[in-house]
Length: 190
Image (cartoon, rainbow, N blue to C red; front, side, top):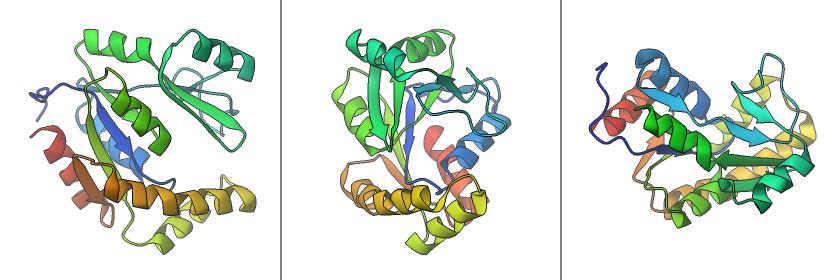
């Protein structure tokens, strides 16, 4: 399946932190390198080890972020903890014009905003096999302090409920990685 899917609308992937969204969409990109592209979001948080500007995120100041909001440059934006995140309209338009299928990795508030926007997208929710699995995965990352882990776990309760009620086109339980990936690929190429 190296051809592009017949449905080339952006694919919005959402789910709680630690559920494996990034792993799944990176597999999609690795197996179809010329078809998909990630919509690189803007954020006010600092880069984690190994992350690069304009590859993982556009790292900007809070003032720069607020300026982009004021100029209506985002299709969605949200604040999580003390950091701001947003998806640029221009990024999606540019990549779609190049023939790429854009994948957006966004949280629940962002999903609500995209659904209210003019962007016609497909929506996938990635869920854990059990809430305890999320905590295990977050702790295994080793990138968060205890306070951050607690906040993410508290938020995951709301996100899991949102996943059940928000009208996603597809809900994938990420219990077995290859099985979850196959479900994602089948959905994208249906």
